[in-house]
Length: 346
Image (cartoon, rainbow, N blue to C red; front, side):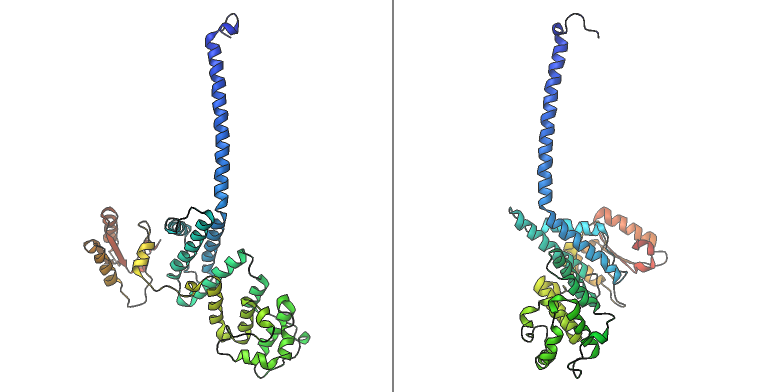
């Protein structure tokens, strides 16, 4: 509004318009580059989706452990740290497929190793089975109806509609009810009950085998039954071999190392730990790890930086001072009897 005369004679206005045009073109170019970069990032991120699926699947397997024992609680921060370690430590490769395979295999093994340290011995194989089944379910390699039957059995059944037990001298009534119901509910095991009636002697040989989980099944069933279907038969006919059958199932589908819980190794624990999270030892009565920890500290040249304290009445301020000095100077601080100071377990 302050311009006088022809606008074309106003050099400063023309320059401003010209600069605005150049700026608009630069912004447009930057937006195009930004859009291309976004597409490249989305494509790269999407290519790693199999790794994201595997990691989320394993996290929810870990979360479900609380249904077995409320002590089995693992934070999301712990899992993030574990996955970041897997990214850093897993074998690298320029080939994307190979890299994802390496990362998934390394992280799966790392989860098993780290979680097993926190489980009671009787729950370790159950954890392996859950990992194995969830991975197979995601890959659509397992029949969910057959797996649920393995877990729950037949439940309430109409016995009047079932054929009579062909060999009550070695097949108990509960086992036969479940076998007959398999015939009705599981299409892949159709006619299994008739096979027991027709080949009772062959089935008895399998039943009496020392290791039925590896012994061949009678007739056509050796080729018809997969590992899960075989597990269902073992579950009801030879429940004493279920643990061995599950071990074979996990070893064949996930690998032998997933049925061999690692022995406690403080060096391995140290390698998997971080400086921002404490190591918590849940000990049996009379067990004292101080000597072991002191020895490890000395081997690492930290013998003069190892300090221990047994918590109890009046020890709180001393423990706080030890922790502050440890964080400042890089000490190893071991606090015993933490259950006496609940605030240290928060």
